[in-house]
Image 1 (cartoon, rainbow, N blue to C red):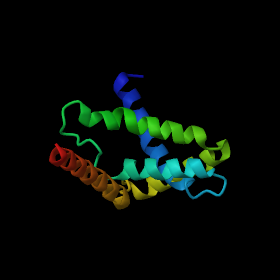
Image 2: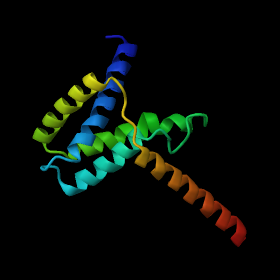
Image 3: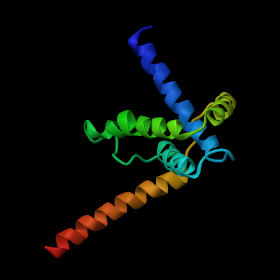
Length: 129
């Protein structure tokens, strides 16, 4: 397998598992802490706005290449095996049917609030000096 094919397969698995976490957060057998991490990860993954915008050199892709896969890996590790199996099947079915990446406007709002909070803290720190 060529390296480009390997990267594409990895990206498809990441996308599938992000959607799988959306279904896992509603599954009755998912532990509470795992549900909370699933909600956070899915909101961030599906948000149309990144925490670090992609146009920022190097750092813009850190969240896409490291942070998001790490969050997904951690959330999947916290889920029971039967929940993973059922929710992956649901995610694959949903992705085949919809043929589009879902979007989370709640996630986008959360990212905007984080940026506004960071800007406010910078302003407050500057004013306090």
